[in-house]
Image (cartoon, rainbow, N blue to C red; front, side):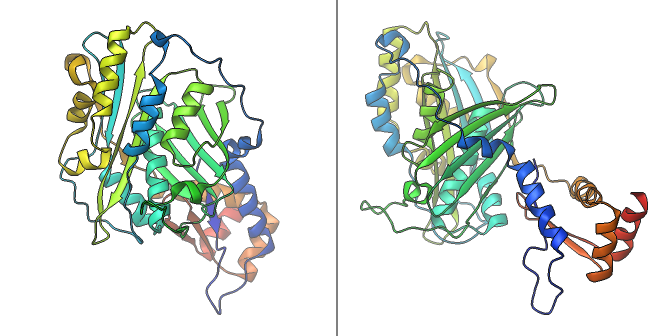
Length: 381
């Protein structure tokens, strides 16, 4: 999906937005946020409690550790300089006994690009970055052309958060209010939970050949992103998992590091495997510290697995990137959106304004359509 805004806030002295253009904005927003709108659905029925350790992640210990792992010390503004030297990478590997699957991501640069495009405040930076990293963990290495959309729709000041990833790790995201920055928590950390608030988390998996997306909706548990994703996996997809994502900024307001991991225990995992995994996870530093210290995605996966070891010979890798928002493709889609208004409306815009500006809300690219291009579109209708 690509959400566009059509000259929604013209500069002083410029013509006011044509009424039909405002209607187009609402129409496009409705189409692009179709999946997000599903968040109004009732909460999915919760899975039956798991009593056997053989099918669990020893959740109390793991959840406690994950609270500490979601570290973020972001600060205001957009920053493109990154401190972590490790290249962005997504890495998936199995434990040596093939009972545990781990996906890790180093995403410092891709999150920095998102922050640079959206000019987010500190807490909005953490929320957007964590959501994008979560979408990468959920969506990468799925079927060809499959996309995964993560939507947080809470009652906090940040409004709605949308992050979309394809199966190769191309990701994009947006927040309704990039200036959301509530007071710090008592422990001095960014209060992402307060920014998100209470509401619903929706995860939608889509493919061009599917009749409709597979959509799961759960209540937002904490608003801190990682815990909510883990709850979604348990309640909606019945997958026992441990999820940690983090974004931090340094004192100079540059992005220090961003990364995360997702651990999934297979149903036939032994008690010994679960205990070994619990020990390794409980001893881990935060994801942001690991990335800032220069650990690669592969090294992070090895730390997560600990004494379980890994099978690097069957591992898979991918490089995350922001987008795609090809300008030529974006122009074509925007032109088609204008054409969908009908010839009469397009002619009216030409007469009153002479040009139209359209902005993609994911990449913040703005394209201006001059009178001659609008006239061409009108003739083609």
